[in-house]
Image 1 (cartoon, rainbow, N blue to C red):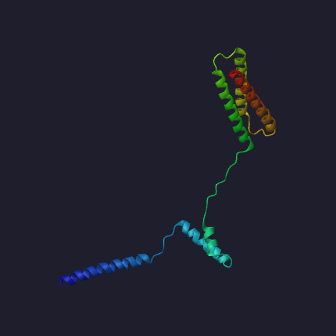
Image 2 (tube, rainbow, N blue to C red):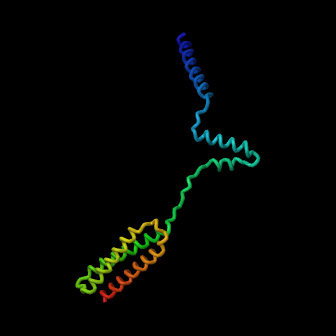
Image 3 (cartoon, helix red, strand yellow):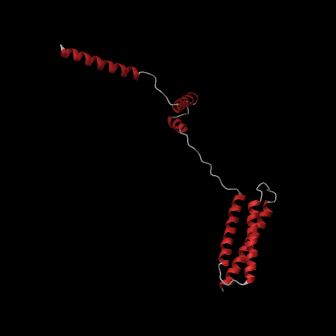
Length: 163
């Protein structure tokens, strides 16, 4: 009798477990909001364009990709970066010439003048209002010309000191 009572008890537990599993599996499926959106999107596409929509088209349309916009710098930014590079190059040349021992006084005065001009260019570039577009081209050509002149004179001074 004990065996049958154990068997009955065990069969009741197993039956109850199976019953609970069946009840739980029959319930509504829990959906994520994204899944629900995709299902609605698919249903609408199938209902309105059922003649033209294939499964591949539907799958491709349901894929969302983030598109990165490639930003290209505007003309002002490019000019500013190039000019800052020239100014830094001029500063390096100035420091190199200053390091030369026994620099004659006239060269030192010329170097000091060029260093002052280079610093003024740097301040002009940093203080120039980007909103002033009407004078932009004149400012650009003037600043480029001045930066190139300083560069050429520094190169001439450097080569004169090396000889």
